[in-house]
Image: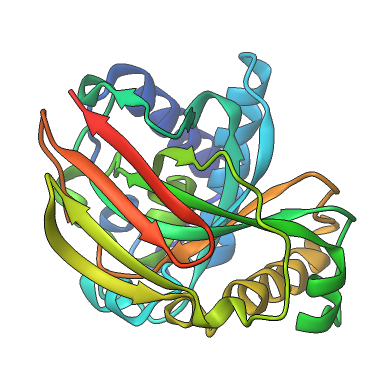
Length: 263
């Protein structure tokens, strides 16, 4: 087998830190270690996050990736992944985002869950997520890959913070009411032209189902989702490339619109 050992894990974490800092891609980790497992990749991710936190960053929530069928098909994987969301990657609605900080960015729209109480597995249910949720927020995420040309397998994107680049959150936190978050509709446009449509159900069956999966998945690692955390539940459509000058807008039923501009 060609799986990484502890020294290899540390070396790959350091390579991803450098790739983020230098905005310069590296070869897929699975080229060197074709038998690399998701567990190996999460160890690399943990090393990467530890270094970034030591450099002054902080965790404000978590993101789920690859929760929709279109994104799984786009990248050739068959299961979701997750990573912490770092404060340094967060923007507000209406932000102008410089593309020079990214390697090969793509844009996607999604629904986020803001927690009002902590959540933990091992048997977290959708009903428990509902009870722990402060509200829902619209978001636009820039996904990016430090792996050259997006030639990734599941372990590659896991190690690379689930391909997170940046995220803009809407300013409204909408309390759960007598509606199903899975049925929230979304229209996604670029420069006023329709790119895609979607609904909350596209991501793991619904935003609350996605959070329950995350809480249960993190439980064996000793991680509890804290009160106040923002959970990004995954794209509602296949991510699209962006270029300087592009203005992206997502209009969500109940949650309202969110817009970012790339320069």
